[in-house]
Image 1: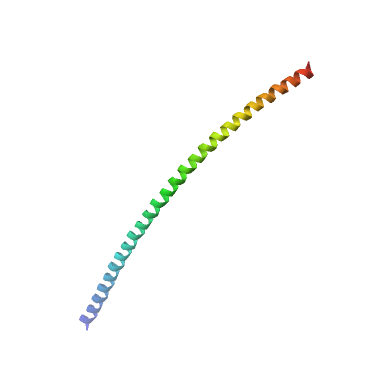
Image 2: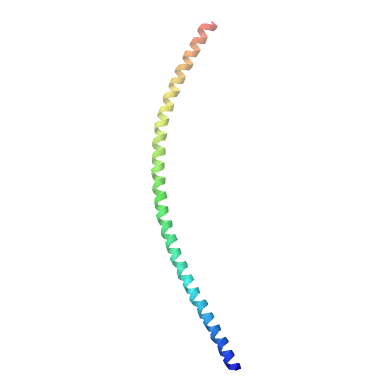
Length: 94
């Protein structure tokens, strides 16, 4: 009777260890698949972000050129107004 009990315990222990090794292998396989998907997603997102960065940089550069020209034009108008104000003050203050 004792031999049968020890045999049952050994069979259960072997089954348990086999199940643990099987599940460990499955988890490792899923981890590898997940790593592959994450790496693929990282590559795609990096490409898209780089593309957006290049487009955004060119748009900002274009906007900078346009705004610089407009600001320079306003600076000339302000200088002209400053001269007109100085003439006006000169006429009234004597």
